Image (cartoon, rainbow, N blue to C red; front, side, top):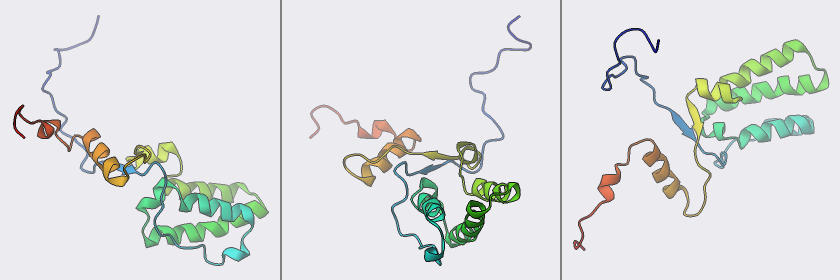
Length: 149
């Protein structure tokens, strides 16, 4: 028995469509301006490396001042964890990192995906490719009649 009930209509549309569309993050990471870690000279090299990883991550492209502030507060917990690991600190760090898209499951929940890496002609061409993948660029607009020059 293949299934129960009538055959689904090919024209069926979901009524509970997502009101918020997906966000495409830069696959090459964030290269824009970002704040230095306050008191960075007071942190050990592992905490500084953790912060630099976040600073250049694709997620950083979406960060506002409040997100950077959260990351600065979290750096103190990361520093404490590296000095004296504990289950409670790790739990708090994991919870905060999940809120800013640390793991692939977190990014899926936030509807974030990575775009294609930048190659060649720069960000304009990459934006065109992303728009084409999302169906915003109708390929028929590029067509022209033969002999029309």
